[in-house]
Length: 258
Image (cartoon, rainbow, N blue to C red):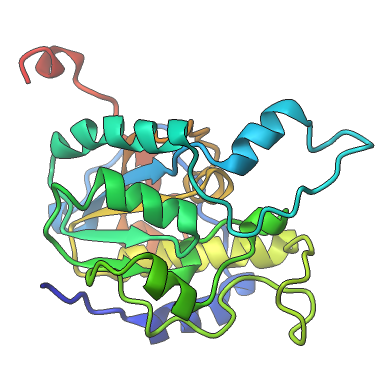
């Protein structure tokens, strides 16, 4: 089993300094050449359909009478698991192959990674709290590392380094209390994730995460459940606080001959 180097102190140092840095946004065109070793490939995936996704399809969250169903750390539905299984075929065809798999500690992301990636991927895996979803509802409140270890016994998922409370909570004495994660705190965390990815030694990284997280990370990409999209991250531009992430446009002609 391969063990990835966490480099966590760097990410936390970056998080503390985020508010003084410029936010990185997606840029549409590449006007200058970058050194090849400075550009990383990111394969980004959103988790499968969950109980909360199905609830939100029937109850608009912005409606005046909306009530949080309190589905803590929501999990995949039958449709969600089927979608992750179908996505496994796309994972097998990813090019370049990921050298590291980064997964949010929320159960829906772990389930999706377990189904879509682990059968075909034998590289290192990092369960990284920076990749968690913004807390909107109880479904975004996580589970303890002990519960996660029991639920996901695959040895490639390592939970020992998770803090006791790794999600945003409004009351440290009651980590199950639900409260909206402030926008500035969320943006700072996503900025820390960008820099952490840029500083990693791997050239190609896969990330399994969430709609809000991926939307902010990429500067506006709208992911469907189980959708996988490939982006490039210029590490030098990211370190300089410049626009650094852009989506790769698929080569449609090449895809016909896969």
